[in-house]
Image (cartoon, rainbow, N blue to C red; front, side):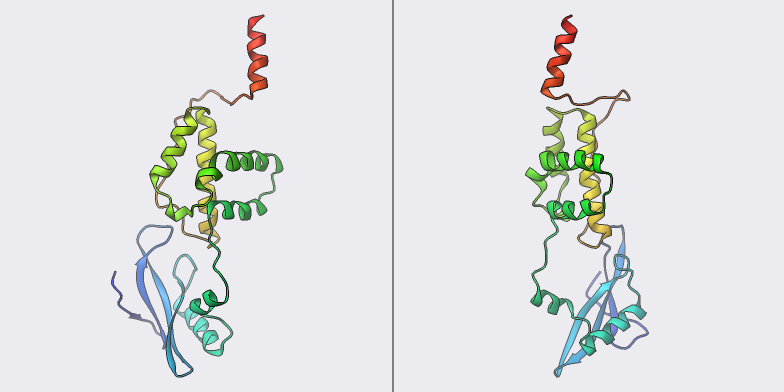
Length: 202
């Protein structure tokens, strides 16, 4: 994958082959070339798979850029500060789409307790397997495998949601999940453990 321009059937629209975001292989990244104020502008339009972009759509975007109805990426970044979609930021967005109040409360507790302190400020694409391995190992010292599985599952869901909504790139690896017995396990609160201990003495 070099920097070679590959022409399309539309004047001023070409693409370059780039590594696909969120999937294997490559994808086309479309560009538009036009003149503005006597200067040649080369602007990124969108990506083939992630943005469902085609040469025809890219040509329409080029026309909008020429007319000033659509800003180029450079212009957008000059006008507004790009939001960094960290795990914490994506989680807040994700909760808007959740309707199950009970399970959301549990997941929100797990996120704020186990994920946010160490991974909340990170972007999904910046995570490496060691980040999740450390979290998993530390949690396994004090939590059940089932709880650890839920926590890692939340990490995967947040990354997938962010990628599907076009907010960020997804994870570059598959997190290792703990082995869970078939029997049901759950974490007990200190009060529950105390009551259980007292009942066993009778």
